[in-house]
Length: 163
Image (cartoon, rainbow, N blue to C red):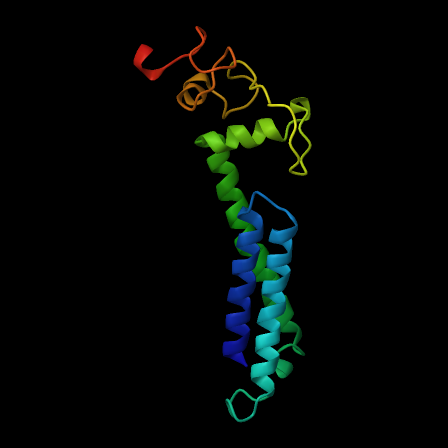
């Protein structure tokens, strides 16, 4: 029973990490996570009910899920590892932002006019200056084809070679 509980807690913590760190949610991603959980429990209960496969594991999953510490450990380890990931990701976002953070921020801002359901819409404009978000500075955005003027090669563009 102990090994089943430990492995189930590891699976739960891994799935929580995937859910927390995943950015592009859609129907397929959600279905994949739900199917993954379902498939794990299906394997656990079918393997536990198959006496000829493993005599030592016979009915162990059924016994484990009837213990409240099983569910408590799954919840505590999943939420504990998720809190650590959220704290680390938040610190990284503010201390060392990436270009993808800036693009994601602009796409999901209400001013962009883009719906967040994946349908196409007008191209977002990046805000000028550094003040609107920590991740949109002119040096980073100009390296990736954005500039103050809105297009690569505009006079307002700042390149590293000019600094």
